[in-house]
Length: 198
Image (cartoon, rainbow, N blue to C red; front, side, top):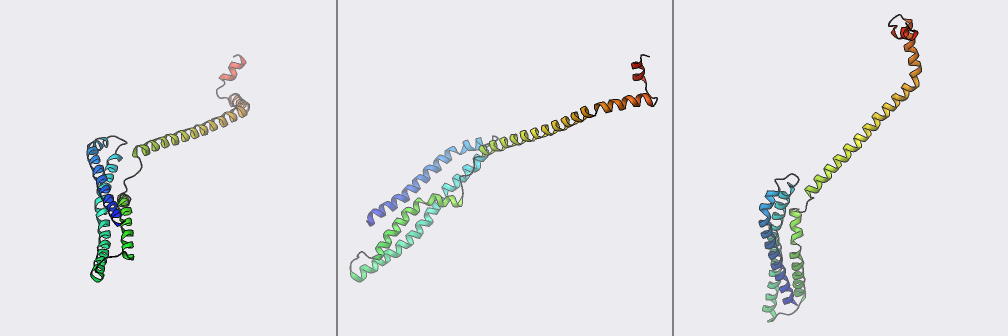
């Protein structure tokens, strides 16, 4: 059982390092394209996301080394206990210490596969899509402009209709007032003379 777990532990280390190397090679190949795309409007976010992903994946190895040194220290102490068993009894035997050793190997396997998520705590590489944010902002601005224009047009239409209602309602009185003022104060009597036939 111990040998199987040790093989799986070594396979987890190798798997994380191989995947890390593959990702770094792909990111290095895509780097010049990302620099080129970052020039265009709406794609500036690609450079920061590429850099964040590169640093994130680059940190896998140091984080794995820190985790490996912690697990290695625990394994070293357990091997020291096994050596003391051999020195005192002449042979090693299965004990609670060996059970703890197997448990720590399982923890090591799970821990190595959790290295990418730990690196994601250090550098968060999965931000929002900048182009999608730009489209959302533009569509929101267009919607706000449309709503404001509609409200303004409705307000102007309301004012005009109120003014037209007032004009229709007070038109006869205004007409009579104008007619009377033109004829009574001796001012411009052109309209009165025209109606009277002069």
